[in-house]
Image 1: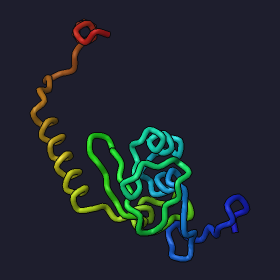
Image 2: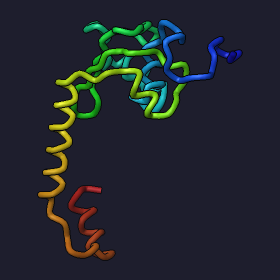
Image 3: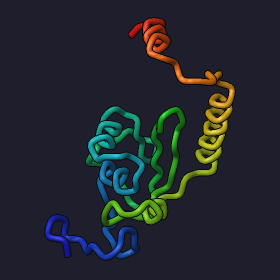
Amino acid sequence: MNRRNGFHDSGACDESGPGTARIDRWLFNVRLFKSRSLAAQAVNGGKVHVNDARVRPSHSVRPGDFVSFNRGATDFDCHVAAIPLRRGPAKEAAACYTESDASRERREQHAQRMRLAAALTPRPEERPDKHQRRELRRLRGR
């Protein structure tokens, strides 16, 4: 039994865990954001919606809720499958939500476009020397 939150630390994502969790904490624990403060900033900024409603960081989520937010250049949609007890390994965290098919398809299309753009980007055969780097910086306005 953990003294800070009153929950057992035995597993990250199990059925006997808490029934609800704060949205910012849930987003952090399932590894959709790198820190809890980044998750709270996204929620405060109106980028996170639970059941198609804008929420605050203290909003509770429970299994079955629909969570959507903007993840980089694509929208991410998922259903809450479980409430994790802690921020555990990525494999356990991924079991706590199910991504929608449309979201998965959008993400894969975006990744394909990024791979194509990287392949079409011209690459120099050798690294620029000191004078060429200075010229590149000047052209970029730095």
